[in-house]
Length: 279
Image (cartoon, rainbow, N blue to C red):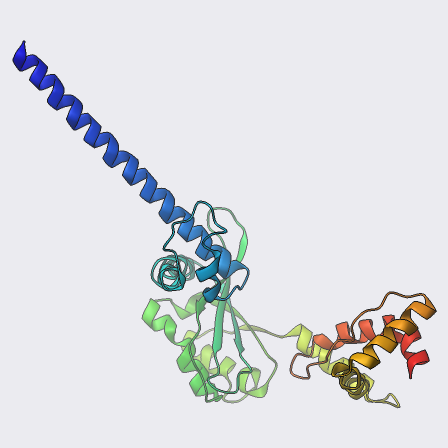
């Protein structure tokens, strides 16, 4: 009887330890899941990683030590390899469209390499990031060297069926362009489509040159006239109330962000009755 009681006691103790280990393991899994979700949230909404130092208290299911360094490690060493491997697998297994663009940074220019493919299981069209190398020399050979990550990832060039990029000569020119170099490597004719937004912007700029005034210059001059003066802004608000419209802030036009021109013009037209009275 004593032996049975002893065995029973030892068994209960072992089961208790096992239960504690399982509970601890489940708790750790929940913590890992919460930290991963937090990192995905920061990436999805383009929030600076420094915000993770102060956002811990906002995430009630998060751990107390998920600070900036840990969030950065999760993104670079856990999430990035997983998503990159999924993109590489899709590129190896079937046809895809290659989408390229270069940043307008004044220091190191980043060369964006995206692929557009059809998901094998769901049939959904997806756009995924393949790589983001630095490319400060804008020649066709340098761009091809950046795109040559295909060799590192063992992606066959024959899977590239189309090329989407800016309509510059270095990208889509007939002689010694990125398009012609890719066609030599892949031994196939690429369907090439320039940036439609860029083409529309060029057409609109050419048409606007026939106007008697430069629209962009007017927007910039009006913005800077009101920007640093609280008194002028207050007077414009009073004129907006006088003509019966809601006051809206005049937007600044950024020449390098050509899509901003439409929003600036729309806002200026909304405030035009008050602006005419003000000026």
